[in-house]
Image 1 (cartoon, rainbow, N blue to C red):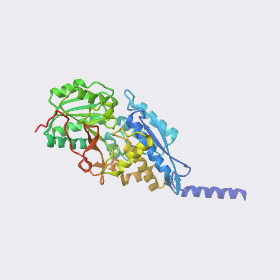
Image 2: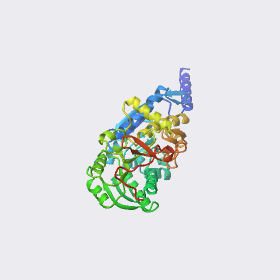
Image 3: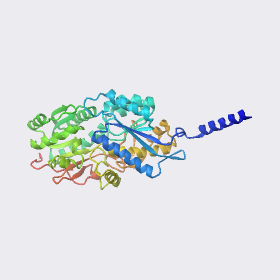
Image 4: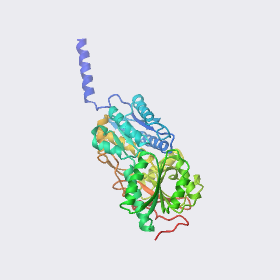
Length: 423
């Protein structure tokens, strides 16, 4: 009789287990892993933004999973892939260590270098861990996702090089129309996304825009002397210098540009130039420079209130404003996307989470959130229809004025003192 009772209890337990939502059986928390370069500005602020969103969600009660409210927990690891000389395999070891030891239900932010993300896609497929990447930018990742279902776990919530090129082409087209410019000198960092951006823009300049590329220099990560290339740009008669860098040393390029008085507009992306602190860092000598903000929310827009709400919340929590132009806003948004996907799936099963993420159709701090076939967030020029990046211009009194795209523009592009239009 006693044996029969035990068998009955086991049967009831198995039935309960069978009926319970997949993945939520023994969980008392939802682990978000953040493997990235934590000692770099973008990585630090992206990690902070993840924690900001997690705090907000946990204070509101957590995440509903199969009738049970669970809190988010963040586990971060510094994979150092943005540092000069760190090999890709070392970064991958850090990601796998996090997966094996902390058992994350999903990863957010991810590698800086596209080389590391591309090499890590098989590992993510093997462990079936969804990644909402917010830094690495090579379009090759979404091409792999679109061509092979095993890579479905990889999403990109941030701008990719293809969309970045679209914003640059839009700004350059305006400069050509407004000021008659048609000569550009390209400078880029020697990493995959920057090389891809420079290569695609070269084709656009020489094709659709009908500009002349008067020079092109590539710099290894960690380079700190740009004077010879700036001299070449000046001698070649460049009207626009298009920089593409995400390394801290690239701020020196701006200082040298000002010191040498190169008569060309600086318009592109230099990571140390993006935040409000750049004005003090560069002694107020960056007026007139145009710089990209990869995702709205990393700069507040009065014309899109959700971006300002997030920006202000970050400053209120950490006591300082955001300085990075790439990574923090999509990292914050990713946590909310993950919450919505888990609740829609009613499960922590990775395949169910991926399916729910794939079907996302909502407003976020960067604009409207929807993914392509390759799990790339769709960017455009209207925050009610797509996610947005933008360009701002440093004014001569130290303000960042959004000038592109028109839907959120706060002013028009002005040339630096001493520079004239070509028409």
